[in-house]
Image 1 (cartoon, rainbow, N blue to C red):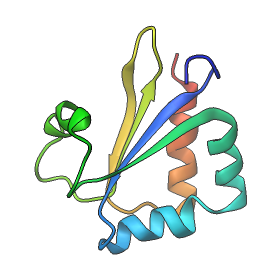
Image 2 (cartoon, helix red, strand yellow):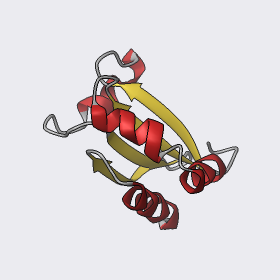
Image 3 (tube, helix red, strand yellow):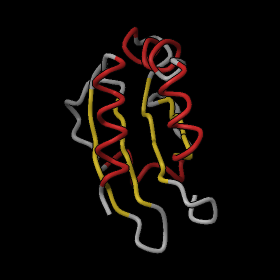
Length: 106
């Protein structure tokens, strides 16, 4: 992400969750959103039921009551930090606003 000059979007989801599937299959697939994602983000999807052990610290920092999907927008190295985060299903217009908000932060 750093070399490409992009932010990082981590989507924590469950394959059996309707909101998670809708976000990935319908919202993120919309042309105007896909263009922003491809140009400005490195996207990582994590199955909350079987995450990679290396991601345990990230997942353990999330509140346990959050619904899926959870989207975490990160600034890349050298100063990685959370820029924005959301939980639950998001309509396309709201998701696009979230992307724009994450991109606007220094």
